Amino acid sequence: MRYADALAWPDKDQTAQLAFTEERNFPFRKFPKRYAGNMFRAPNGELAICYESPHAFRLVIQGDAILLDDGDGQLRPLPTDGADARVVSDLLRGDLGRLRADWTNEPIDDGLRLTPTLESIRKEIKYIDVTFADGRVQTVTVNQRNQAIRRYEFGALTWLTGDTAALPFAE
Image 1 (cartoon, rainbow, N blue to C red):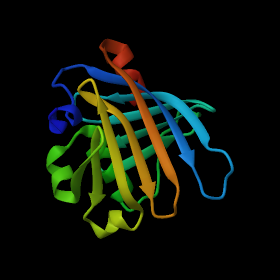
Image 2: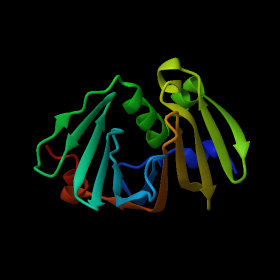
Image 3: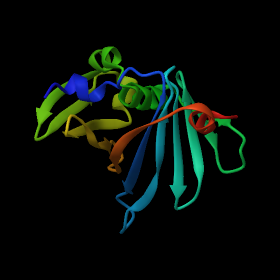
């Protein structure tokens, strides 16, 4: 399998939707925190991550900015150094040029291990493991420097059009 093909989004003039689950493990917690929701990618590359449980909130990634809607319908910028948004956007947008420039990669069972080359990213992230199944990304596991681990598992890709496609990005 060509990993570049699995990381790249199909070129369509529609909004892509992926259901996901997220598990956050922290060294100071006995049990992980679990989240579920949907991720959306617009044809222009904007991303919206809409969490549905355990409570509803939304992240919208525009360029190197992350905007948060904590359930009240208002998008507010999150303070970041740009590295957080860049990591998320490079990987989730499938920006292969930036992934090659900012990460080294090595094969692992069923996937790749991405290790950051930029100091701004290395301060926060040790490495990211990406696994593939059926020609697509199946899981992403982010191993952070503070020993926290975030694991994302993705469902099947669906396509949206019209008003439904615009909703996740609405301000």
